[in-house]
Every structure is written in structure tokens, then in C-alpha cells.
Image (cartoon, rainbow, N blue to C red; front, side, top):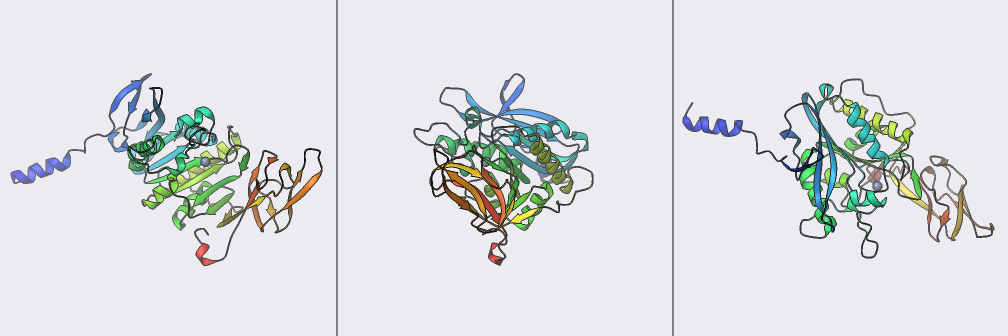
Amino acid sequence: MHIWGLVIALLFAVPAAADTQAVGSLDGVPIIDALDVRDITTAGVQHYWFRAGPSPVGQPWLVPVVVIKGAQPGPRLMLTAGIHGDELNGIAVLHRLAASIDPARLAGTVTLVPGLNPPGLLQSARQWTPDWTRSAPNLNREMPGKPGSSAVAGFAHRLWQGLIRPNADSAVDLHTQSRGTAYLMYAFASSPRTRRMAELVAPDIIKMDKGERGTVENTLTDDGVPAITLELGRPEMFDDTMIARGEAGLLNLMRELKMLPGKVAPPPASLFVANDIVAARATRAGWARLLLPLGALVKKDQPLAEVRDAFGTLLETVMAPAEGRINMIATDPRTDQGGTIARIVWWSPDPVCANGC
Ligand SMILES: [Zn+2]
């Protein structure tokens, strides 16, 4: 071989400089500023603290990361939870996957991030910071972030650049409904490919949705990475049924991606796919009592809830604004004028709505 041919061959044989370098450790767990799962060369489970930004009191915000490196090569799946700090079921799902996925049987790499928003989780707040006097930014509207801008944009940028984007060939971001409300098991998808991902996770409802700017899901899909948002019921609790369903659904998705051996279970026959949504709102403030359960099928103008005043006198009956399925309810009966009592999803046959109206 010509000498320059040898030099070039050697250059290409040398792996790229490792991004995943410990900058310190906490109780033996490496603290890192960047993760590239390709730097991990042996099958097994690795724990990291990802340094996602400074806090006002000196300690950095540390985000927990579990990397399960498979014994065989394969795709990189990114699973994140807790970007809204009152939405907890996804954290338990990721903990269970960390315990149940055997690296020896895995092809590819699963990165689990069970708690993207430490300040929100500390306060059980949907927002990134509980600084109610100034702003309450939503971390799931800040991706891909921006360095040198606001604290939350810098935090989002570190997560996006150092953790989420470099390690995702596909992704699922786990949520629940917010405080005072509840969902069924509910997935957002934006294309035929991500609809297929959502079907395999076996939720009660899939909502085809164009999405919102700055979410983990839509920032990934805009960048060509198939991703869905998975909603698992109620906030501020570990619900065993939802957690077990979330775990089973994600394992099924991994079988479809050929990351785990075994037969892929088909989507459930009861799956309800929607592409439009409408809120049923109270026009009077008072105490709202639902007349139908979460998940019920409704007809247009069917009574949904009664609103009573402080003495128990009926103020109004809130009717269903459309025919469809109740995908969300208010669990807190206190309602303001214009407050959402429930949301109803349905399928619009309009072809422009195929991937969300
Ligand atoms: Zn959420």
C-alpha cells in the first residue's frame, strides 16, 4: 500500500474522539456534559449524571441517564420522561425497562432519561422553574434550545445537543396529563411512520397531530427522527396499570425495531384513532360534576357535566360539542368561567386532516 493510502486507512480506522468523558462523579456515577452511546464498546448497563446547566445556588442541575448497550449492533432508541415535573408515570416505566431489558438479548442501544426536568420535578410543577413571579417556561416548548439566551433555553440546548439528538434514531417522550386533569393512555403521532410506532405501543387513543413548536417529539420529527409523545394517565402518582401498559408497549415497539427478539403484537382492536379535538367548556364558574367517565363515546349535545353554585343549585349542563371519545377530563371539580371540563377527539374524514387537522 502506498504510504498515503496507509495513513488514510489509519485515519479512518481510528474512532472519532470520545464525546462521553466524565468531568467528575457523584457516588461513583460519572458526571458527563455530552453522551455519544457509540463511545460505549461493551454490552451492559451504564448510569450517568448529565450536567444540564447551572442553578442559582451553585449545584448543577443533574439529569439521570441509563444507557443499555446491546450485545448486537442495532438502532439507538431514546426514551425520555419527566419533562413536565408533575407527570411521573413515565419515570417508573423507564425504571422498569432499566431492570427488565437484558443487554445480552438487545440489538442496539436504549438510552433512558427518567427525569428531564429536575427543578420542575422537585416542585411537582409542569414548568421548568417554579419562579411564578417572573416566568414559568415550558421546557417542552424550548427544544432545540439556544445557548447564551435564557436559563431554560440554555438548559434545553445542553439536553438537545449533548444528550437527546446525538443518541436518537427514534424516540418516545413520556408524559401524563397535568395536575387537576386525567388522560387515558394516549399517543401523539404526526406521520404514517410515527402512527405505526404509536399503534405498537397500544394506547387507547392515537391523536394524529401536527404538533407544537419546541417539543421533544416535533423537534426530532422535524429533524428526520421518528418520534411520538406517549401520555400515561394521571399526574402526580405512580399508576401501576399505566406503568405496566407503558412498559409492555415500549417492549413491543423494540421488537418491531428488531432490537429485541420475539413476535410483535398487533395494535389492539379497540384502538381509537383521531385527528381532531375540541374542548367542552363551562360558561359558568362553580362545582362541575362529570356525568360520563373518561374514555366514554359521546354523541354531539349529549350531557357531559353539571355545574352547580356554592349552594348546590344547578347553573348549567355542559353538552358534548362533538361526537367522539372523551380523551381527557378535569379531575378537579372547581371550574372557572370558560374552564375545560373535558376534551373530545374524533376522526375527520377530510383528506387534509389525515395527519392532524
Ligand atoms: Zn406533559
